[in-house]
Image (tube, rainbow, N blue to C red; front, side):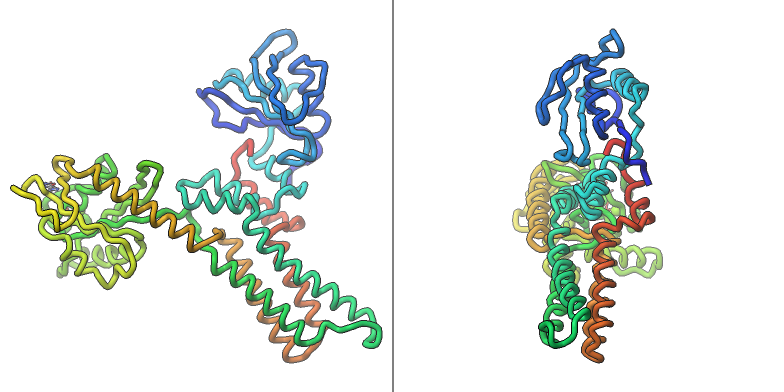
Length: 445
Ligand SMILES: Nc1nc2c(ncn2[C@@H]2O[C@H](COP(=O)(O)OP(=O)(O)O)[C@@H](O)[C@H]2O)c(=O)[nH]1
Ligand SMILES: [Mg+2]
């Protein structure tokens, strides 16, 4: 897909006004030659050390920068790499990259550094995917799982199972080359055990993983009867006027979402339609959506201007083990606020906002930790589908072997399974998969 025998250069940080920018180079010995040319240093840089250098374009100094050299193969791409931390700003970066291009480096395409890491077997495909996903991640939960996969979380589990099949296939192919007297057979029981253990391991990976096409986020649904102040509460938390606030009952017919970041926690806040039986078909649809939102949420805020507990009772069957926060709104209209009815707030005056946010953030953190306890891995759609296919493949191999005890068929089925493992981790020959994955990367990664 990309050429791999030249030296590539790209800006690895966001362009524009910033304290620092990092220009990255990867290639062969030419990287060292470029270093010497632009810094006018006589010595090669010592690997993994920070070197303060003037960067020259001929006689003119264009920046004073810090260069770190990573010696092949101990670098991200496995090639020689140079990272130049420059002063921030467009002009300096443009001049340095322009200079390196003039001297013979090539502008890197999106994901080309990661592609080289993949081709040079520094990382497998699941790790490459995780790098891109981690960069795009918008919340703590996704980020945690992507970093785990970059560190090889999924690969390690999968490779262990892959090895079991390779070992079994090696013995079986050996058996096929010799006649019965010459070697020991694996035996029916052992073969069944191996296939069963492969099945169990893949199943365990699927069981301990969650699969989502989009980034995951803890969802918090605001639920209550019309006019209780749900949209006002949504706006109070979101901090702007994204939801329409109105006196006419049943205005919020659709759900509105906002992503909130508060004190190191992030969550999606959902304003729902009121819960109330009505003949208006449009509003009924809103109610169905509300129930859907309650089901999707990890935390439900029951809001009311009289007794939020009544709301909790009304939606009890949909709440199950979800956390429920009771909020008594419009306390500005109360002469005295009853403490037993939930957390008192006033969307009008903003009183109680801080207390609610603290309660919410503790609750979100608790739910986030639950996620971490429940799941050890995140799978993207591609990985999920391959693992499912693997399960079906093992089932098929087991069934066919039980029926006909044919070792030749078994060997062919095992080879089929191994190609699925390759698709998952290193489909070196499958350019289509590779192209699709790397084209989504940003330049400099
Ligand atoms: N006095 C007072 N009125 C409020 C408060 N919160 C909301 N309201 C009013 O209650 C009405 C319904 O609010 P809204 O947020 O649209 O309720 P929703 O139907 O539950 O979304 C509006 O007229 C708001 O101005 C509050 O804290 N105090
Ligand atoms: Mg509303």
